[in-house]
Length: 41
Image (cartoon, rainbow, N blue to C red; front, side, top):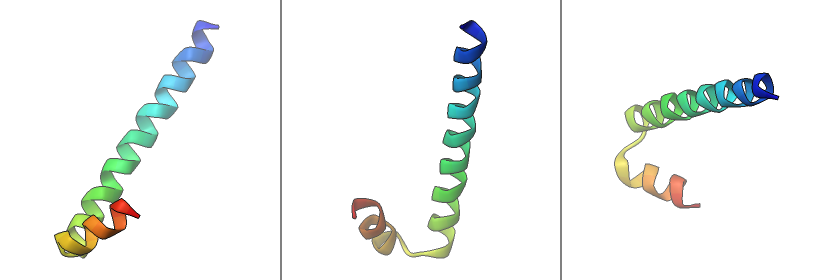
């Protein structure tokens, strides 16, 4: 059970890191106003 929780937490951390990388990439590629519209939709 603890192994399963650890695996879930590792996957969550990876997803979080991936999300942060995507946000940074969007921040670089698009102006802030366009990014705001994208995030809100």
